[in-house]
Image (cartoon, rainbow, N blue to C red; front, side):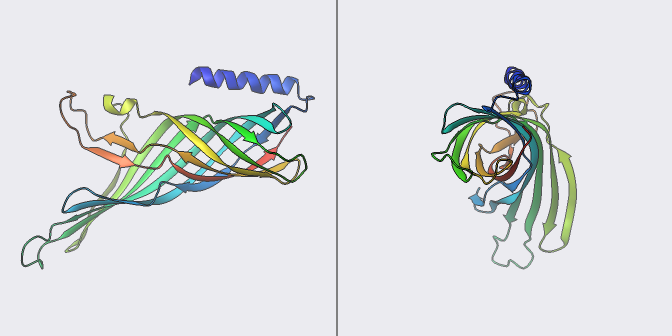
Length: 241
């Protein structure tokens, strides 16, 4: 990833020196979107997980290089905060008399911060100020920090526990999860010379965090799953050069 960042910075520097060239553009790109997905997973007879969407916010910069009349290469560097939601339900009502059997529900908010470096190609068959386009590419990323907030409740006595815990990337099984390689695709619209809009979907696998370090690969460790890295993002792109 360091080599990729150095490569990107060289392009920025070269572009600034050659700003008079119409092939280069430089933009700011604030964004807001929806993290995660709507999904229910039945783990066993008593337990299920319900995932739901949270939100994404981010900001960054983009260097664009026009390769041809209809094709542009975009190289971005951006920071993003994302949060998805998860509800785990454990229903212990298995006896004939269920009046004293509780239902345990734990609400989770999963927060992650990451640096990402999208590299995309934009294709637009139009050559006017009103220029819709499609975009697709790859996105290396690195999670800088993560935190899980939770509230546990019982159907009989109400709230029984709450707190937050950092995502532990020092555990060997979790270290490799910090780096991610995903894909993005979407559509954009150039309304004016200095303003563009873009809606993209960030494809990413779920993050399965190990609960503890077992000290042996032979032990099957429970994992905590979050889908905060995937989702839709809407960007406003403001041209600087």
